[in-house]
Image 1 (tube, protein in one colour):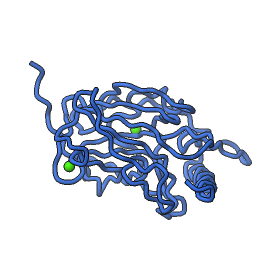
Image 2 (cartoon, rainbow, N blue to C red):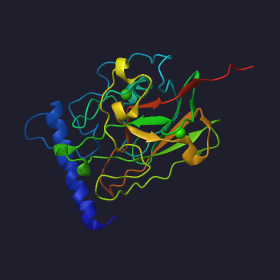
Image 3 (spheres, rainbow, N blue to C red):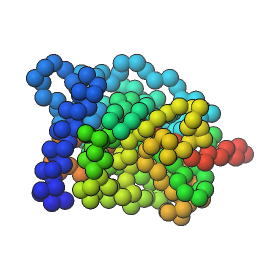
Length: 251
Ligand SMILES: [Ca+2]
Ligand SMILES: [Ca+2]
């Protein structure tokens, strides 16, 4: 990333955090500059443990368990609401609102999720959707406030296939192959089941791109590229399955 682009992005980040504070009315008293931490941690007045999430509905095609979590530098936001904060459906609601029902992975942090009785099955097109809390400051998708994450999938939780992710981006709001870029648009069971990423938003991944037919686990690793800025990295809201198939019963 060029220095110029870095400066542009830090400026966009500060602007974005301020916009989020205005949108959420959750950033403390007047004149208090919001911390440049992450979109979630940036909402400094918003407690991360306000109301516990309900347990995930095992009949919905979303992650149902946290298999592993390795916090990175600056993690902390959302940890008091684990595991349910990253299970079940997403909580975002548009291009100008980032969900606060998230877990900040911290810089370099990673998490592994499982899906209970469901497996991810390859169908033509996208097979899974990762929901973070990116949004568009001023409504401009080229200025998306993104904290990219690298996504991997696995059948057994030990051998992983990773989707290549351009964490530096192109400066026009594109971070090819990364999660944490496309805003969550809506969640309404009446219109979003089966999961349709065109309706819900979120970042989509196709198992066939990494040579898998089935996956039972998803790993997300923060690769947010903000130099030495004190970011808290990728803010995970939820992970959903487009074509969920029931796993065979254990013998
Ligand atoms: Ca596919
Ligand atoms: Ca969530």
